[in-house]
Length: 249
Image 1 (cartoon, rainbow, N blue to C red):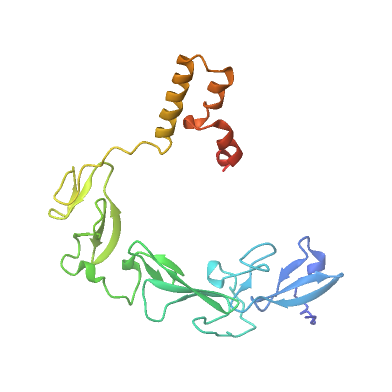
Image 2 (cartoon, helix red, strand yellow; image 1 turned 90 degrees about the vertical axis):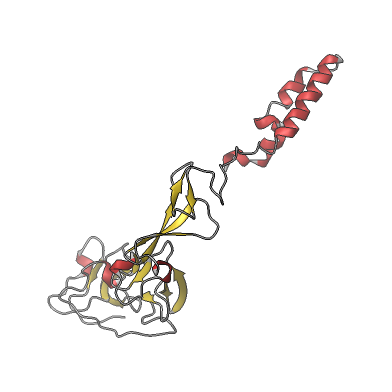
């Protein structure tokens, strides 16, 4: 989109990057094309951030920096379902724990986890005490600063802080006791002492290979290659493991 430049507009063809922001509008920029300055608009909802910067085409979300200080927008919003602008991150209409990411007018629903809520001012998930307008979580109705079991989990629980739950995990070798509502040394009525990890799946086959090798040696049928072939990782045949390429991934 070619256009006449203002006299105080920097000429992109005289700069190293060949791209400069518009002097008046923060959602427009000039690029040097065939030694001539050309005017371009950022995608709707984004503003010019600089060449090779931002989320696309040198443009970024306006709240990420002071891109628009002393400038105005040339273009108004183009709205679609759940999207105030074609590009952006927007709060959910009915939920404090969900929000929408919009890309070219297509909205994708996102979820805040771990007891966090969506903060429209920060455009990200945040601690509930930093988010205005959302009710305190019903998990913390009985005790605004207590602990609450997380389903049948033995090591994770909710810790209420000022009426807002935060997901926590007991330290190693401790379990969450539903009676005392704290992390304790097991066992408890609901959680046993952690068991020793089961042997790796290949151990029975390893023992079988070792027994076959011993039988061959006892009957004088062993050969020099037998030990080499069964000496792969974990006792599995080295050729099979290598051909699968699993060690490289």
